[in-house]
Amino acid sequence: MTDPADSTGSGSSSGSTGSTGSTGSAGRARARAAAELHAVRAGALTTVQDLGRPGHAHLGVPRSGALDEPAHRLANRLLGNPENAATLETTLDGCAVLVTAGGQGRSGPPPADPKVTAGGETSRGPVTEAVVTGAPCAVTVDGRPAPWGVPFRLAAGAVLDVGPAERGLRSYIAFSGGVDAEPVLGSRATDLLSGLGPEPLRDGARLPLGATSAAGPRHGAAIDTAPWAGPPGELVLPVVPGPRADWFTGEALRTLLTGGYRVSSASNRIGLRLEGPVLERAREGELPSEGIALGALQVPPEGRPVVFLADHPVTGGYPVIGVVPQEALAAVAQAVPGTPVRFTPVSG
Image (tube, rainbow, N blue to C red):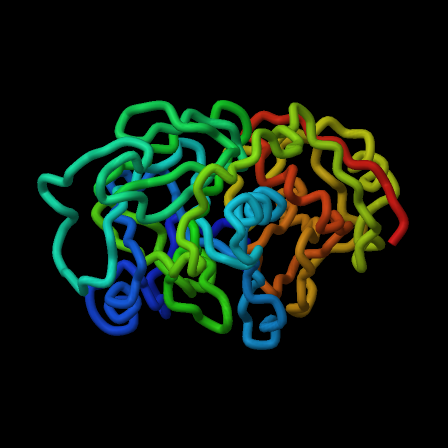
């Protein structure tokens, strides 16, 4: 049995609808787009995310969706979008995109000599509005500072650059009307494990934006502040006993709740890997494959637990010692490698 969390964050193109292509459904989506994004700097890992595709576990399809769901929801609320509108989820070093007016059905690379303007203050007017939430970071439009956590306008030809995370790991970029990638099973989310949804953003890729409201981008309606809990300096995770807790010794259960763990750099959208003490098994062998819940704390043979996240597999042969409730997983999404982790028991 292989460890499913070994899957890398590089994504698979198998089965992907790939909105970054130039033909087919992606091309049709671009042709009707109100505006388009051209990836100037894709960043370490930037994906399209919404609230995922729950309810398809029987097809072997993970839930997927934004890892820091509150940050994704907040970004859409700030723009007046539905909370399931698709955003860009960046990882570690942000990304940069050029905005163009859509609906031209044009193919090929981004404009070679775009007319660059700042903040939408041009005679052509803004084509969309954007906001950045999640991990705090520097934001610029055509090299000029733009606000974090507050909506701002973008004109055709403007380059939005979202810088490296100053705290935390993942930032969310929302646009008025949302990213209009082709839905798969009711979701536009990139699923790295199954290869569903748009491929991770690559330099030169293009994505359509959905139409804004009839009134177009808002003017002067931005709020000054929005409540937001910053990325954690320490993860304190509640854990409910799992269905296979009896596969571990009593000492292993005590170790889980008292041992000092840290976030491993091998973590990704599939699972949060931990460094720390090994949990001793009371029973050897593997289980028949069985479903795994979001937040499941599975223990592979090397003995250190893995918290399964949005792109987690649906089956596995290793025992689940506990489950971290979903409401605690947003903090997990922002935990950088080396972050201390403690588990506290809660009843199911």
